[in-house]
Image (cartoon, rainbow, N blue to C red):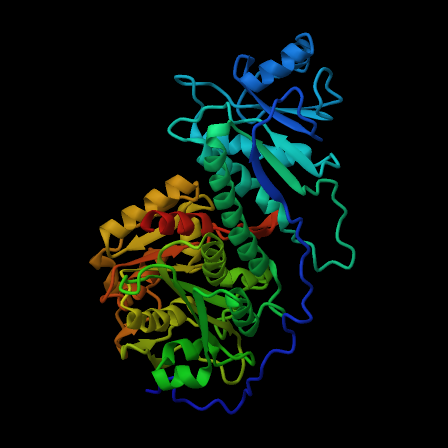
Length: 527
């Protein structure tokens, strides 16, 4: 038996990457400015005024003002166009009469219950704004939706939804094209109407929504980058850049030599076949009291996953650049943290490497020794995420965290179980699980708790080592979580399997930025 941390690697010489952030094109952002102000929807000059209508053509107060200013032509136009006010309906009117706005965007909010619309309907409708305005050259808009009452929510929540949705327009996925597509909608300014006594509340909500959008955008950017640019070294550079001039954030990057000294044989066994040097990126955000135990976020950062010697099939292998979305979501969450300056201590640990086949690569049947001392029989080199995460989780013990959440595109089995709607959640602590589920509901970035029963642990038995790295076809996402649970006995821990939620395939291929909203909401609730 040999440990990967002590086995020689003569066949592969690792060097720093040739492509770095200095020559990787940087996407240009729109730099949208959000503000809350008191407006008169009839007299306020803007390129586009956004108002709401409820099911049954019941106009909101702002829409009623517009209708009255135009001799009730608005209601006549809505009837002519078959607009009924159902949730998600939209109608863009050019050169509206009687008001100062150049355009009028009418959004349907669906039915009201006790004078309010549902949280889900409000979110769905707000996301329609950018889609409806795509054909226009608008650079600034005014959203007069403050008079739309939302069940259980106030002005800050509504403003947050607007900024979180529209703030994502700052990210462009086509910045590596020689000629990026021309788009007409390039918003520079968004004004949100409110009342005088609610300006401070709405402004706070806008700041929170924009900060979350910036975290999502960073996560999407890193996820969408190809593996020849977004390498472990690149991720380390991005972490250092994030900490630049940030007094509360410190970043330390451990190299392979240091990992070997720590006994991270499991992590290094995955890195064995790659010419790119592996990195363990450690972020420490100190926004709370010194004595407060931190929350730890641990991200899987496989910047490209070929499967190693257990080679993946060719179709859709390009999407394995997304196997670092767990790491990307940790960096995105820290981006939001530093923007908001939350009064909380948070540690981020990112285990990042490539998983490549070569003469030096780990072979099926090899046995390695993890940092915890447990030996692992590697039956499938494509089950590599758990091999890097187990050492990262053991390393995290030194911070004495009050809770640890790992985020990983870990198993295809989770996609089969939950599709792309919910993130799989596993935990050894009921309170932590409930907190994360609650945060998922509040942020519309939902998770679903899966079992972590002792009965599943038997599938990981090995004749030759303490544990095998796979447990067979049955319950693959569960046995993967069971594997990780062997390394989390000293703290409250939850595992988020984001294999189905981190990116989309097909014509809409691209990173989603999940679960940044869930993680940020969880930290907000903790703070």
